[in-house]
Image 1 (tube, rainbow, N blue to C red):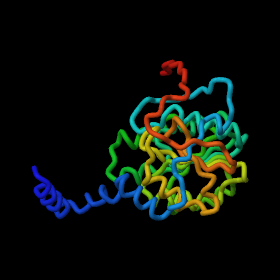
Image 2: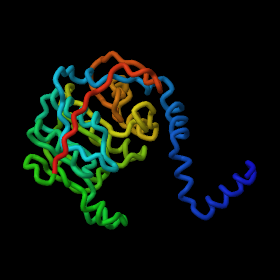
Image 3: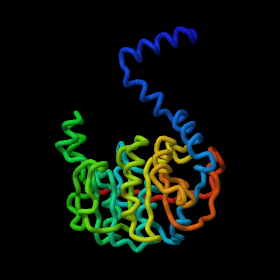
Length: 268
């Protein structure tokens, strides 16, 4: 099919299914162009290592880890645990519970954990399958120090918790406007200058920036704080941390600077 034929076919598809235009507008290329236009003086590729968060010498245990669809990377959970260790966290908040793996991983390190997600009824109303809905909170529902909150993060009244947080993990809706809203609404709830905010899926994979999310992050954080936003090497995450940390620019397909040793044990 020649280019003209492809254009005609695409035009017909857009008429039949107008929602497909979102795939174009939300494409990584479109979001990158918008990012470069809006944040001309920002370098979004600044990347720090996991040891820049907390210089650990011993192994970090990740448990549970399901190796299932929609999960985080092992290194993402390591980052969350390091952030909690570094801040000596007493209060942890996350947006997006899913199976409860992330909050279950940090629950042994933190006194009070809060995790917000749409309720089962809201998920069902969106047409999501029973298996998907029932999988929520699987790993976290029995954790006594985990409070499960229900609602839309764009509308939820966080002031009712009467707390500020050492670590905030944003892993909900990844559209730019949702990331911006979550970031802007939760930034005032960081407890102190030592607190850390973490965003999941700020990268498409460990070596490629996901501009749809990064655009929301930079829009949601005050301009004078942009210098404190970094990608984290070997993870899918970005962090806000009020430190001047030595960084390297993310460059695809560089030779590995280090690697990890992983012991796998199956738990039933």
